[in-house]
Amino acid sequence: MGKSQLIERSDEILGGTPVFAGTRVPVRTLIEYLEAGDRLDDFLEDFPTVTRDQATAVLEMMKQALLRQDDESAA
Image 1 (cartoon, rainbow, N blue to C red):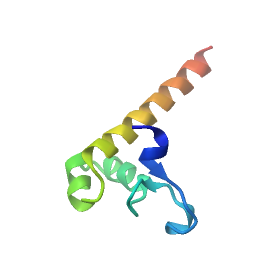
Image 2: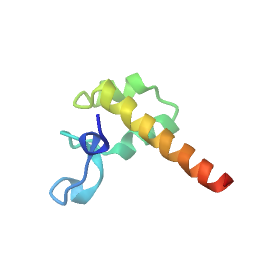
Image 3: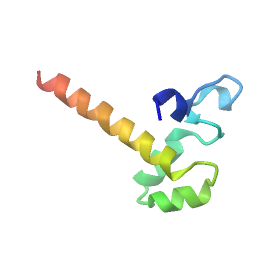
């Protein structure tokens, strides 16, 4: 699943806020849930239009971006 299939951004959907593809659920909502100490299952239960595969793929994408940033900073 590529990045373009995971996240969409359109002026017609929430004014261009990045959302999980095929939904109106902002990606930041997942981050806010996790920051608040909620479990991934809580998020998925509250937003059934987001699949577990989508959520974990977005988290993995963010992790890889942070690791790349760390690598670049260390160089």
